[in-house]
Image (cartoon, rainbow, N blue to C red; front, top):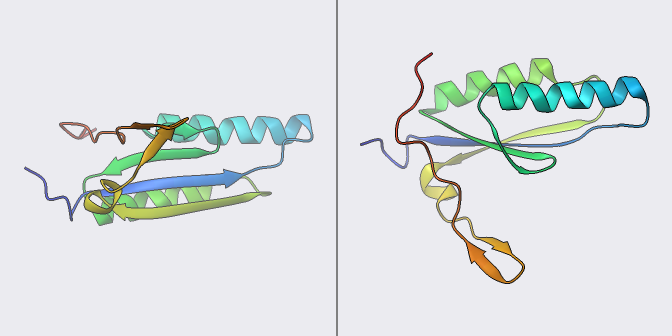
Length: 108
């Protein structure tokens, strides 16, 4: 069993310009890159992904930084699985379960 203090969650939040066709293409490309990297969309500009440890999370955050569009703001936040487990999600007034980490991490 993996430790809830070793597993890290990455939360990527961003605000990218979409005023021109080029900006829209860059924003879509960035979102698609996050999905290709295994992120789940929480909201339109908020994406989540568990990582098996901090080193993997740091490496992924570096790749995200290198792929960020030249304009706009991108933030990558790190949470342990234990911290992320304290998240409360609501749809209207109904409380929802937080996203679950996968039972097994993909090695390739």
